[in-house]
Amino acid sequence: MKWISIAITAPEACASGPEKEAGKIAELLRSDAVEFVHIRKPGVPEQYLRDLIESVPADLHCRLTLHDHLNLAGPLGVGGVHLNSRYNAEPPQWNGRLSRSCHSLEEACEWAAKPAINYVTLSPVFDSISKAEHHAAFTLAGLRGKLPKGKVIALAGVAPDKFALLRRTGFAGAAMLGYIWQGAGDFEERLKALRLRRMLIENFPLLLVTGSDIPDEAVSQACAAYRGGCRWFQLRMKNADTAVRAETLRRLRRELGDDALIMVDDDTEAARLAGADGVHLGVGDMPTAEARRILGPAPLIGRTAHNLQEALIPDAREADYLGVGPYRFTRTKEKLASLLGAEGLTALLAGAKEAGMNLPVTAIGGIEPSDVKAVLDAGADGVAVSGAINRTDDPVQATRAFLMQL
Image 1 (cartoon, rainbow, N blue to C red):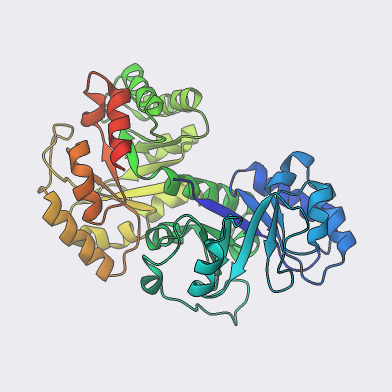
Image 2: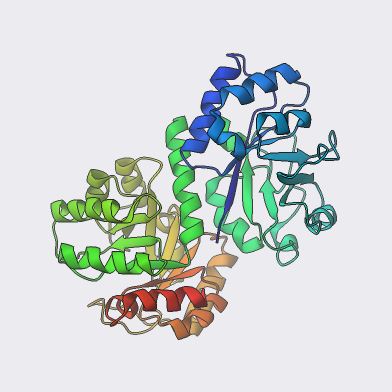
């Protein structure tokens, strides 16, 4: 399901001029870190906004949204306008994207119900990054199950590590200001980290784990699942060396393209050499902090947990997601931990939640399409599958069967 990521500009005019700011906006959009950029500049002269928009490449104007001087939207080909306390009505004969700022659940529900509204922002959801005096006005528990489906965007204090928690609450996306412009580290690395975590949330329901040490077979398995609709892949070649894994990762990228998340099991060095999207590490593998040092801040790191204790150790908490299992018996792994089943998975995830662990969780281990409902009811966010797709006569259809349940 699409996750709507939005960047909001700093409210003031850029001291280096509109051309400099336009370059950053174009970089944001070209990187696919965000879907839209909202230009919010109360009090900034209209001419600055005109110069800013005209300095953004014309093919990106459709992904811009104006909060101020809405009269510029039509003539400059801007794709969206955003209603707020300063502008409570769209320009005459407007037929582009329409959004609205909201600051209460009741207001969000009222505006989201209007057919012309594409989405609303609800704030402040967390303590603001950019405005120290703005504190959260909601609890996520109080919002869960009450948000209009597919129409509410979380705003204030949002960073990519909160995406999974926000999606579980019912948000359709997130808008960010402080993280985009004031976050730690290099701007380009921040955008890459944002893009990968957006893709993780969008593609999380189904992870295909390859099941062959032969490169041609592993690539073939991933390609079949891709044709079935899967977009998240973990290369698992237990008996191959790093060089073979790295080259197979490169082959997967050439075959699957940039809209696929491609990770590797256990081999951080292969991930680094191939420029993969991340690595999945087992309980006895390298510490998360060490893998982060090798890979840098952007790539994804997943960890395995077989029980509640393993789900709560620092290595797990520092990861981007958890793979929890085995759910049932599987022939894919030679040494299995104790089987969880539906009851064990439910208890484990309930305990993790109670302890404050909010990472997205994919369940793994012998899962069939008929198990998906029980797995999701247990609290998992998706499933990781190998044999139930790779060992079938029609892996494309097997992939579709899982996605239909997800």
